[in-house]
Amino acid sequence: MADHPLATLVTAGSGGLAASHLPLLYYRAEGGHGVLRGHMARANPQWREVLPGSEALAIFGGPQHYISPNWYPSKQEHGKVVPTWNYVVVHAHGALSIRDEPEWLLENVRALSDVHESTSEAPWQVADAPPEFITNLLKAIVGVELTITRLEGKWKVSQNRPIPDRHGVIRGLESIASPEAAAMAALVKDAISDV
Image (cartoon, rainbow, N blue to C red; front, side, top):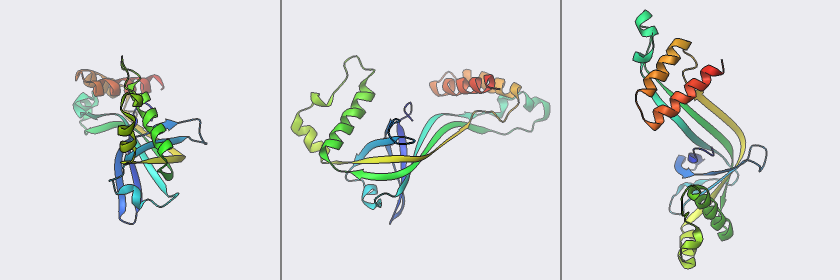
């Protein structure tokens, strides 16, 4: 969740299910499983429909990639192979609160900026913008805070395939030379070393 902070926040309200894509910061030390904090545009109708204290789901997607059956040595042996998709996700369930306090919103904007600007040579800070500009922007957002009650990690990294097929997946992914393929190849390698 910390490495891939863009989450899909899913809620149920009077209009049915709603989803928004938001960067959420994970505060591990708070509560049993931690707390997620972020914000959305005030113009987004999703937050108005959320019942106070209702359960929500934040879905965090990690590395993912298409897996070709051509990469499996077992294709030549028996041909009983099909394409699939490897992925890593975390589902965070919990009670969702809507936060509207200006101090809370300002701290959330600061924290998000500080985390995501931390690798920059000259990190942007909220204080770099005129105070009245920030004050007006804070009026255009509402905060979301999800107190996590349950975490589910799900992953498919070819662990259901025989070791030779896993090595074929690694070779296939490494031949693509993209960051996504490299990340998935590393996960498949790690899963082999865990056997």
